[in-house]
Image 1 (cartoon, rainbow, N blue to C red):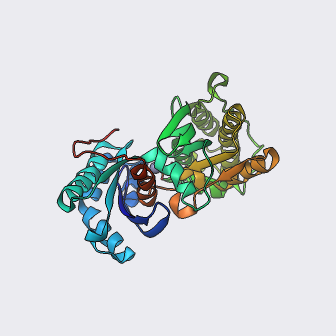
Image 2: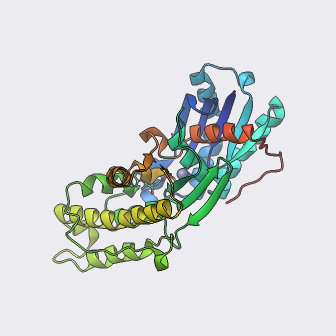
Image 3: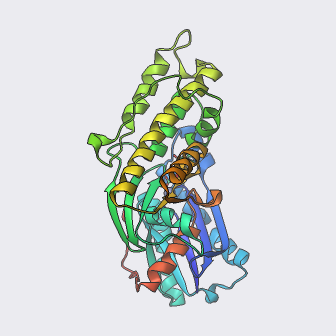
Length: 333
Ligand code: KG4
Ligand code: ZN
């Protein structure tokens, strides 16, 4: 079964053709990232305009790359949330129009669940139940996943998402946007024990909070002498700050994940979202998995950030469970 997936929840306009939930025939992504850089974050209006201007081309390219005609598609899948209202509506309107004109079923897919699915688009995926972790620019969530359509929320961030904390710390250090990849790389050259930035689970629960650590980094940087401005912080000191921040932020993610895995006596742990590309987190989680005897699944690097393959892939599983979306659907921001 061939599903055309469409993803426009944030700043990536993406379309993908996936066969039977796992075989990616095409994966086309047009990002508006470069237009947001000078603002230090995603500007919703710019993102929406980029989607409107590019979605036709992106879909045509994905059909072309897959070597199929639009009439060969068996169903349409689209991200219906969470995300930016204008961005989501562009993809949803396009998918609805195609579903109507082609008379093919439409499946609505949750962006966060699709991120988790991106790590298990393989033949021998984990057995249910497993613990799923979404770590992205907008979310930090732990789920107990009992089936492709049964996600129980166990933990969430009470303020900033972890990716957002990376982006803000990078901004404080004058490292540009997005901050995750550059902090990941810089931290390798720094001493993670140099500075104590605390980051703890909220009230011993499975919830997270990352705004405190971001503020701690801001205070630390502004107190530095002789150059109080972030731009003036020497490079080796920035590396120590990056490494110390990262270690503390990731430690709480690993600790809460282990708590969830042990609480539910789970054998598999699945991670998705932009921050799942982080090299230090992958090492930390793999070490825990070996030591504690569970299996950990990370997405391939090209599926860590926003893409439509994860949407088309999860849609296949939902389709098999009888899920269909009506032409009345709208964005769930
Ligand atoms: O999933 P994603 O592409 O978009 C959202 O749905 O939010 O995630 C983007 C986030 C950004 O905050 C970015 O800084 C972060 O993922 N990110 C990373 C890395 N690569 C991207 N964070 C830490 N380490 C990385 N290597
Ligand atoms: Zn995402």
